[in-house]
Length: 271
Ligand code: DGL
Image 1 (spheres, rainbow, N blue to C red):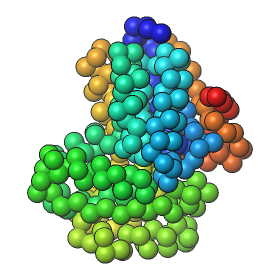
Image 2 (cartoon, rainbow, N blue to C red):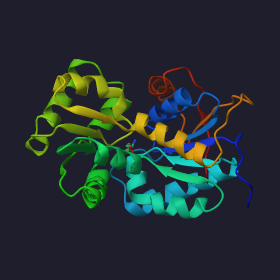
Image 3 (tube, rainbow, N blue to C red):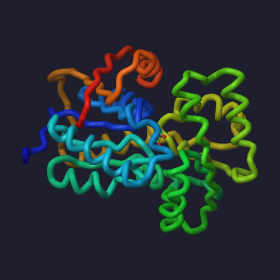
Image 4 (cartoon, rainbow, N blue to C red):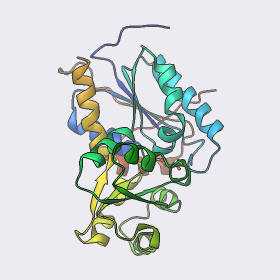
C-alpha cells in the first residue's frame, strides 16, 4: 500500500480508550478544517498495566487500520502507547503518514519552561518506563524530575467521577505524596487527566503550573502539518469518525465529556 500524503486527508488519532479525545478535541478547536478519524481501543483498556508486547501489538494493528483510512498523520494520543510502542508506529508509518506521540512535544515544552523541579503523573507503565525523566534530563540535566504513578485516576475519570468529593479525595491523596514534594510544574502524563485539570489547579492554588499535553500536542501538530504543507486550509468534508473496539453506551456518554460535544461511536473490530 502506498499513497501520497494529501492535505485533505484525515488526522488519525488513537488511545487505549476515550482519553485521547481530549487531544482530538484540542486538534479540532485549533484546526477547524481538519477531519479526524479516532480509534479508542476500549476492548483492551487500560493499557496502563498491560505487558509491553501487548501494547506494541495493539498499537501496530490500530496504526495499520488508520493507514488504510489514508490518514496523513497518526497521533498516538496515549502516553502509555507513546512510551512503549512509538518506534513501532513510526516504522509502520514510514513514508505513508507522519507519526506523532504525546510525550516529545511536552518534553520540549518543559525543557524550555522555567521549571526547576517538575512532577510527572501517569499510568504505572508510563512512570515505570521513566521516559519523561530520561528525555527531560538528557536535554536539561539540571531539571529535577519527580514521578508518581496514579493508577486510580483513569478508572475514576472513566466512571465519570470528577469535580466531586470522591475525586477530590483521591486526587489530594496522590498529590500530597512525598514523591511530588517541592515541584513547581506538573506534567499531566496521561491523556485522561486534562478532564481533571481544574481540580488539580485548585489543589495547588496557583503554586504549581500545570502542563496540559492536549493543548501542547495540538499546537505541535499544527506546526508539523504546516511545515509539511499538509494543513487543511479549506472546508472539504467535515466528516469526523469515532471508532471503538468495544462499544458500550456508557463509553458513548463519557466520550461526550472528553470531546466536549455529542459524537457517535462506531464499533470496529480489528481482528
Ligand atoms: N490514556 C492513557 C494514557 O495516556 C491511559 C489509559 C490507560 O491506562 O489505558 O496513558
